[in-house]
Image 1 (cartoon, rainbow, N blue to C red):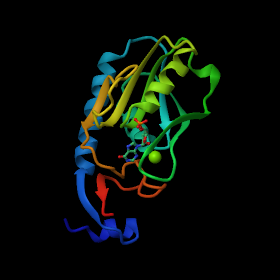
Image 2: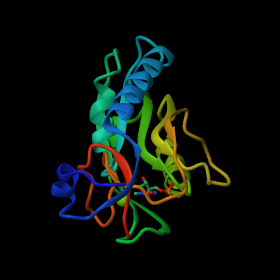
Image 3: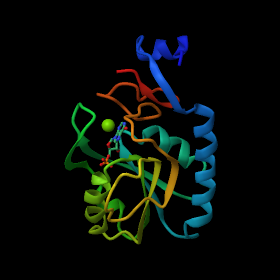
Length: 186
Ligand code: IMP
Ligand code: MG
């Protein structure tokens, strides 16, 4: 695939081997997810959209604008990957406002469900804080996780088993700002 000059300017000359989900495809799908969430979340109750930083920051900002309900937005910081492309299996909760979860319907927003480790570790931690309900919205899902405490209720796209970047997803903190999801050349 030939990488556009615009993309090369953003990657610093690194080529994209293929685009999996274009900017337009993502925008359409995020709008659908927002409509679906609007229909399916309980009316007249406290809703908290909780984004998992940093990977979900673009997805959260697009998704919340498609949810036609009163909501609060907050973020969690967890760290599960080092600099590489392999999961270390460790999940650390680095920031989470204790008071913000209790009694609320929480929509946890993930960029991608890969091994499922992050959600498997995080969901029990959050459940202890007494949310009224807790469901997951994920932009991408690799469907390789064997056993999940709770699978995502809302999923944007099924993702092939490749290391993907863009639309919030990074490789060693780079490429988060690409407007599409793709695979970078090695
Ligand atoms: P899991 O715990 O293995 O499900 O992965 C959780 C986190 O790993 C995601 O929220 C991402 O931040 C990161 N991750 C997993 N797969 C990819 C990928 O293909 N590209 C970039 N980040 C990824
Ligand atoms: Mg990452």
